[in-house]
Length: 92
Image (cartoon, rainbow, N blue to C red):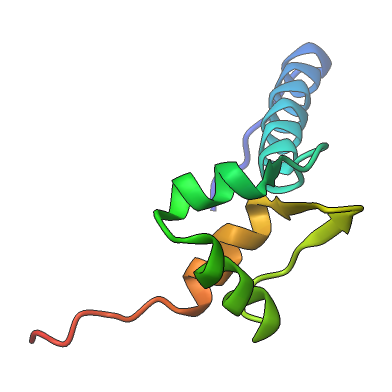
């Protein structure tokens, strides 16, 4: 094994870059703010009827928040639901 010697400035520069990359990866994996969709946005995005959305909520297929008469969905919950119902290709 070959030993590599770095000056303090080179080492500090390398550590700075490693920390920069680490912060970027963490910020992508941990979004600081959830995006919420109201019921109309959800219906348009999923191309479903109000009744289908109600059925999915009643069956526990999709998580939601309700404030008064308004229904909201976290975009991350919608994506998670789609992943849970994802079917891989049957073709070989």
